[in-house]
Image (cartoon, rainbow, N blue to C red; front, side, top):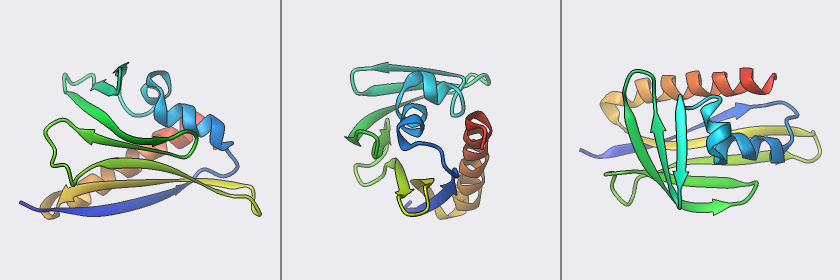
Amino acid sequence: MEKTKFQIEFDLKSIPPALLWTYISSPSGLKEWFADEVTLHGKRFTFRWDDGAEQTAAIVAQRTESSLRLRWHGDSLRHYFEFKILSGEMTDSTSLLVTDFALSSELDDARDLWISQLENLRITLGC
């Protein structure tokens, strides 16, 4: 089955991009909002959740303090999920653009999950 690409942009007010980068690219930062336990070995993250679920994702591309693209183990080479920091220098605002892929039958659930996760990030950052 073919997956559909979708994006969600989440406003994080005036959070400094360097601070946001630590929360989307490091095990300690991701553990605060994305998964219950996160480890990084080389270019491979392992994510564990309290319900027993575990997934690994490889770093596909990275631009320090700008974007991080990952691919879940077992996914097609065309599919990835990405965090991209967008900052408006004129407005002193920061947002996070998340790109992911989901089956059309799971698209709404995938969006809702990301919105929930990003709300956790917003609370963690205090904005």
